[in-house]
Length: 290
Image (cartoon, rainbow, N blue to C red; front, side, top):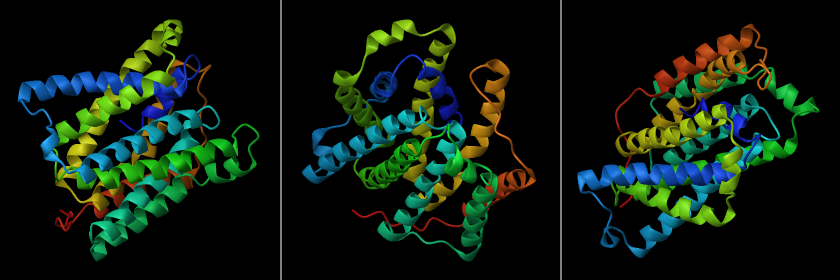
């Protein structure tokens, strides 16, 4: 879901802005999760968390909003492929955070998998790196935005691991979506949505469901799995960006263009997938702080 997202978001930026797109995604997700929570009779309560936990929840929401907004803004300056390249900083930071903050460990075979994964990413993007440095079409401003987005997302993810001690996955996502959506309303221009084409409306609806499904699955994964393993698996997102971009070119060749890939890039893609699988092996070792 996250691999496909940059390609779809780029289509929306032609007509509307990052704040409005993000607000719609948050508010839609809030309603969707609220319905699920009401059915399960699992509404969050104030007494579930201390003052520290609620402050951490507010801060983590700010981090997630920053990730959403800067990630979309960056697409105005750089291509989806470049966004995914720089965003690989996020799972790497998350992996390191899991090891240092939550005392997670990698076995030797997992370490080999991680090396394969990040080595594969280097091969996969071997043509993108020089393009970023020399391109007149892609701005360094976009790269800076994505770096900030990656740091913000990893910070949110690490905070979420702690918050899941006090809240269920559904409760946590509900509070974050409601709070985030309300914070974005003053900065959004909802009237711009009236100018969306049919394809852009399809894209916006997809982005809304992408938020529910993608972050719902991620939150659940963080609840039951090691942070380092989650970070390893989500590193395969660039593969799906490439595949979805191929489909987008077929649908709208005037909007999207094909990013050329050499043999090394294809080899890198294979290494990324195998490395993610290998890095995910092993027993649960995390010790989430109380």
